[in-house]
Image (cartoon, rainbow, N blue to C red; front, side, top):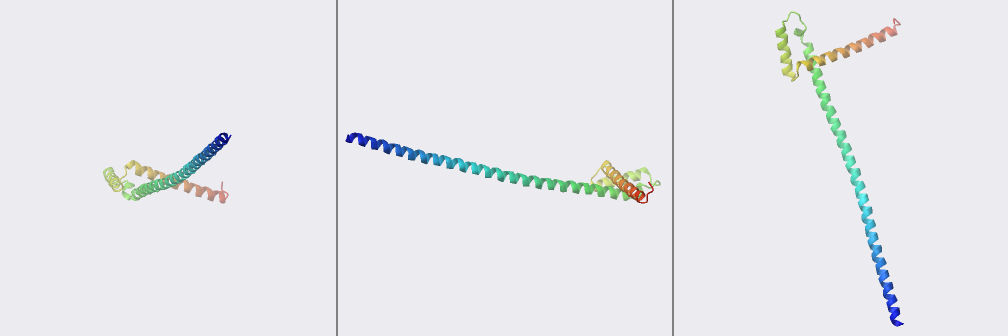
Length: 143
């Protein structure tokens, strides 16, 4: 009888030890899973934030560069358009060509780029002038 009691107490001790060990292992595994999930989420948020900021900065930089190039092209077209000799019928074609070549070298642009910018500026000014005239005519009830 004494032997049977000792055997039952050993089984209870083993089962309590087993349950305690199992509980500790489960707790450790759950903690590791939670910490891993939290770390992954924080890494995702940080990476997403950094990529977003980088994309915005890159876009701003590209926009500034393009804006500066457009301004340079516009200035080159205006400066070329101001030259009187280009519109003077008395000046021969060779002199006009040398003026255009000088302007190309000065601004690092080709003739097509300068002329294209000049035409665009002219068209924009023409559209603005037409709008002003239409507004005036509409205001005076002439149309």
